[in-house]
Length: 167
Image 1 (cartoon, rainbow, N blue to C red):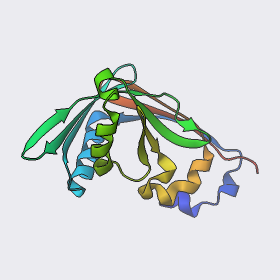
Image 2 (tube, rainbow, N blue to C red):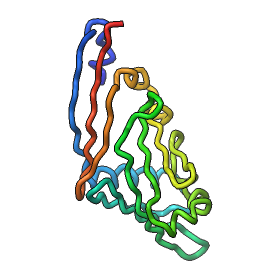
Image 3 (spheres, rainbow, N blue to C red):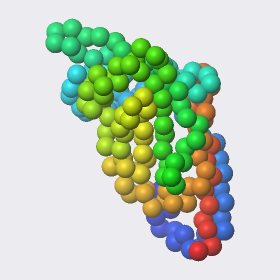
Image 4 (cartoon, rainbow, N blue to C red):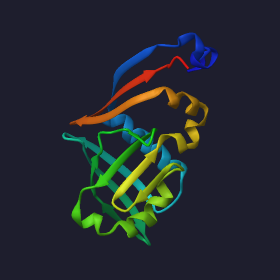
C-alpha cells in the first residue's frame, strides 16, 4: 500500500484490475478474536464458521451476570458488495428465532461492533468507508467498481474490479 500512496493515479489512467481473493475461516476468527480482546464487555468470544451458499454460522458467547450464554445465529451474505456507490458488506440474520430478537442482540453487538458496522433490523451493515482503520485508504475506494462476496465451506471469496478512469 505504501507503493500505491507514492503513485499518482493520473499515471495509471485506463488501468483495469480484477481479482479474486480468498479469505480463510481462520483469518476471520483471528481478526474477530483480536477485536474482542481489545474491548472489554459482555461479549467474551466469537466463532465464525463459513458455510456454502453464502452462509455464516456465528457463535457469540456473552456474559450475563455470573453466567455466560452462547448465541448462534445464522447469517446470509448478500453477494453484492457495492451499495449506492459505496463498498459494503451486508449480512442478513437468517435464523428466525434470532431475527425476532434483534433488539436484544443489538445491545450486545454495540459492545463488539466497531464504527462503520451497524444493525438495521435483520441486517448487519458493514460500511467499509466508515471503519476508522480504513481511513488512510478511503480515497482508493473510488476506484472500486465491482465487489462481490461468495462463500464455500471454510472460505469467503471476494471478487473485485478496480478501474482508474480517464477523468
